[in-house]
Image (cartoon, rainbow, N blue to C red):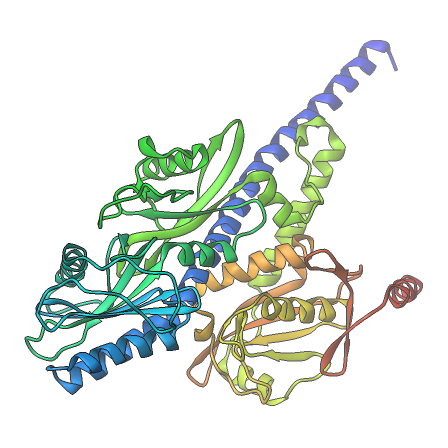
Length: 520
């Protein structure tokens, strides 16, 4: 071959490699954005849902107590009013205060102060002010609750109630951030009617901002920041400090120009620029680093307050790939392009596999559940909510992921979520997902984090109907390579052993892998 032809072939090969790299890079960027959006949405909803799970029990109690009070009629004695607030505070550990009002303002209050409880009862003279009393003697003195403070709280609750749509109220109503009369800290209050007919009585439960922030932080991935925005384009400050004043919480929530936290300022600015979306991921850059964020309305019928999180891209990829970095520069050479194209092929096979019909007919689902748990079938009541503890739990999520890896390391099988041990469909309402799309996104995020997206092609999953309930079915194909369950600091290997999953020791794993290789 002449030198000229050799150079031409070399150049053509280089052009081919670069072209493949560029195309792969473009496809990789598209996939990266799709996965970033998907995982960001899932994680932000988990943060919002953690707050929802924290609020759900006391809000249910608020609704029930309000209805009972309304049915019992008005004219409550001071002792009865005080008993209502003290009982509510004792029954709901997440509460900061319980407040009962009438047409004249605050009638009775019970508030938490560490392990003690403080009570307030409006004086018989009719004045709005009064003295706090401790349920335990010997505690620190509490400043008197001024008439002005109590009037401000009563007016705030009445104003929040007046914002409800006539004929179609969406109780509970919510206040903006406010101070608790005579007490340190700030709170948000939820309220419902507590009187019948024209009775203006209200029952309110107040939640400290510190407890709400702790509930948000509980579900945050490592490296993420919690976000609490208002529809007016303000954010809850990262540090509340001591200078926040005013019942409207102006100093607690601030616009971008008034925030002293650069990251929070960037996130809020990007959210406003994106049109203040709810349930949509958006990206922004801070100090040269790309961040992804999303916020979601606390309630579908009330978009005044939105909760979510922001996560740097590096942490997002660690969450997705558990430290196995994807090729960052596909155009650097053919090897990178091949790796990327291989991953695309896996994803394509996964999409094809998931598109295949499985247990589409309800009769097929009925027959599946009737067979009972076995080496190839396992039931889980929920995807993330611990029914025994009454709260969401990571251990519940990991139980489903454990079953999936065990099926893949064995002969395959089906995981049915939303089904009790006897095969009775329960549905997935206890998990608290806003819709099925949210549930499936959350499942995909769990799979990517704890099983690995490289095994997504081995799983077909979807929502199915059975006896009026919607359940999640996950069909797992056997894997030709070990599938490791990635937890916190440990990695674990599971096999099916009858109707359960058995964890193998390292030596057992090595023997199992060696046996599998001999059989190939």
